[in-house]
Amino acid sequence: MTHKVFTPEVRYRPIKPPYKILGYARRMQKSPTSYEQIVKFVMNWIAANDNEIGKYLSQIRHQFCFYDRFRNKWYIADFYIPDIRLIIEVDGKQHITNKKQVKRDIERTEFLNSIGLSVERILNSAVTSNDFNDILKNILVKHIKKQSEEYYILNTSWRIQKELAQAWKKKIKRRKKRERGF
Image (cartoon, rainbow, N blue to C red; front, top):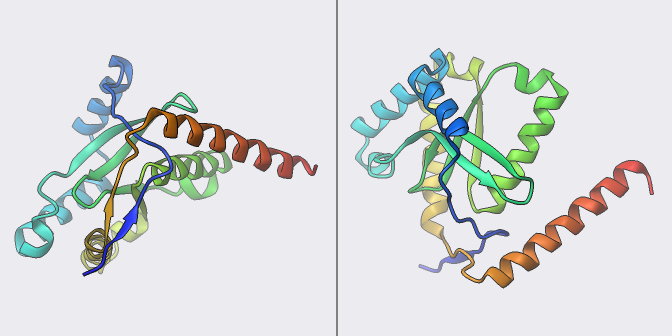
């Protein structure tokens, strides 16, 4: 079996969140939305009834914090599954209708993709649908297959990270110029 080597754009080194962010994540963890409770229940049900998928779901992390050093922002993911490098976000209608929220979601997804994580967004309406078990199972199977085809090599050189950060800043400048019409 041949493997594709995936190297994320940015080397990510986790750091402990400040108490303010950590406290907020813990409060969200202790009082999840009803939709997040359903997703967690369904994932646990799938893990218990399907051994192939269950071995990857052994370390689901709820409300996990990621730090973007270049933008100096913290992101809290609803569900993070480290074994298959997947983040599942449960989104309400404000993530579709509010333009600022859509922009933040795009920015967050770009960052998480740049460190080698996949992001799947699930709407609240999909969570309450009758075939949600199948939807979630298909998402998990897709990412398990992707994980088996690719393996991840994280950059170990700070020099490479610096070069990537400079390239990222240039990319942002070019995008802003295009938006202004230059």
